[in-house]
Image (cartoon, rainbow, N blue to C red; front, side, top):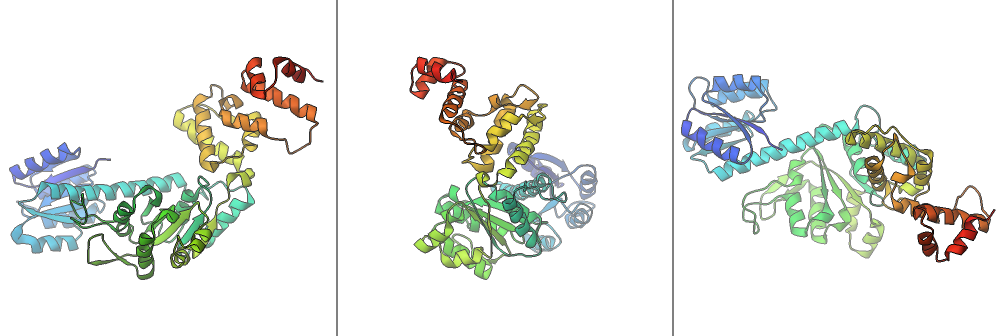
Length: 443
């Protein structure tokens, strides 16, 4: 993601230097040489960032800052000042500037400050996109036809006015991340940031840096100060996915944040206060981990103010059909294909499948089927072989068949799976072609 930058400075050399460096980093840069033209330009185009000198002919930088923050509050402002004007720069921060740089400035420092603003913009846009995709204001975005999922929605509804920490449990792929978003975007902090982090994807050192940030020189590669997710998520929600993968050392540090609302950056000494709501999730049996001593009991109770268990898809089959049709609508639009429905045979196959990968697997199956399907509805031919094999191995729960019937049905399905090749089907069944012929021709 790039951001649009406007530079307002009457020093031609400074402007050329900045434009060259910023465009080399891929930023969209425009420049003017006075405050009046800068304000007019921002009124004509949307800019993410204004970099303005304090001293300019006509409208100075501080006046420009006041007018911009008043009329275009979403445009961030960085003030350029001389070393002798630091007091004015600090005053500009009080008036809404996000940062300041002093002349002569270090270009690497400028790029780091802009990268920070770029990250904030990215997170803001992600949150806006999440709000749209979650369909806020139009009822629950989670398919909940089954009693078990209706219970989950009821729990979420009951904590709308609460700011409590939440622990979500359930197998991989059941939708823990989606429920965490629903909790945030229907709760008291919905206008603030929702930041997810998967604890299983980082080493202990990297996860500490992601969560708490670090100061320059804290470790090899720490070339500048970095804000952590805890700092960025201030007044918002931090979603800690796969919390059980967190090391004991980090668990102790996280506990301090939950208890005291403060932390210290990696390599730092200054305590930073934050107000963050925590939602944690795990696919492991956390009670067993607590009893074994691999997960702190005190941290568990701090996180588990409200617990939500999301059942696997195989235990809530009422949700399979509506989920499938919801995914079909989404994927057909994405693939620009006019597929409107799922055939009864295909739905029957989905209904009898075990879904070890849960809702995530179902969405992948529908996405694959949409890509492969050449008709106006999803047919069994577009479903993966794993489902077809599962069908072969499944017993119809509605009636008990005679062994001869089961043998024939089984042989027919294996033959279909073998695409009509009798030799291949017989080999798969471990019988001769003659025996297969006899089974298929039984009345």
